[in-house]
Image (cartoon, rainbow, N blue to C red):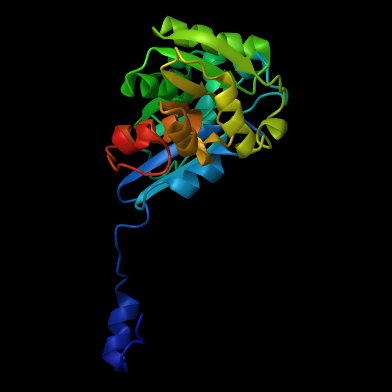
Length: 260
């Protein structure tokens, strides 16, 4: 930016007396994400990939440290408060509960209703709901499911998807109990994991959980397998942008964001 011209006294007064505004950094959309306490991946990935002009804002719900159906169900009681802390003076276009297994434990409709209490002007969504709609958008029904979860949570997510009309051919969990472990699963391992769980009769591979850094390798997995691959943060970013009226097609993160 060029140095301002030499100013007269009148120039200075005009500048100091009248502030000039532009549209700000979130003129296209304002999207809020509610995380569970030890989540360490979602915020990094969303901030890295959200398009210019879209603001992303984060707060955390409350729950015990261990990831289980019982602990995740307790998130329900703090969703409204967490939503209310997200940009309370300016409002949000969309707010999402950014936990797949947490959505299943709380219930999709219950989670959205609680978030609406805290952010009444926003459209509400959940990570599990985004995954469900993302799979439908790429036009698949028969899938294999991979996750970092214990068997109980893996089975819960599979039942959620089956109730939505998907045929879950197999499930594979890594047996991890804590987000602090899940966020450290290496992306190159996730690339191999996706190949290990794939089946010829599967139309797509789903790798569930926002804590996994699958977004870094989802494009490479799709190219190698030759079929759609949906992962949690990819689906959530896609859903939140579309709900906010942002229809940018984003490259490098799989066909869901590139084509839908």
